[in-house]
Length: 158
Image 1 (cartoon, rainbow, N blue to C red):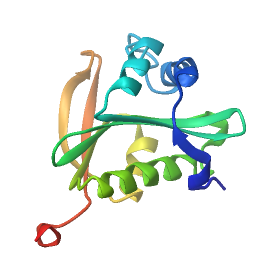
Image 2: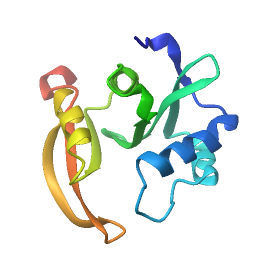
Image 3: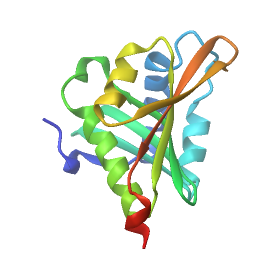
């Protein structure tokens, strides 16, 4: 089982592996948008975290999340296909949630392909709710389901 100690901020040397994993597991059938250059730009952005899960030098998965004032947007989260159902995605999402809570973020948001039943079920298991649907969101090719999770209630802010 993966632990928080297996998760760390990504290094510039991880950009190619992150981009390649995105291409294979998230962006299949679409134009490649999360290139190594874009991943590097995300690493350099003070309002974005790029994290990786690894064992030794083996990259098991990654996540990218941008922060606003009140909410954060999970831009990408992927695991190696051989690592699915082993807790890697759960550990990455847990790391993002914990970081967002420390930052005072109230809501996490994300999009998933409408036909990706596995991703939608994964996020529902982690208390995300489907809040909207965007027709043609993915390059006009595929619809997206928008999902959100509330991290704190209004009373906790007092």
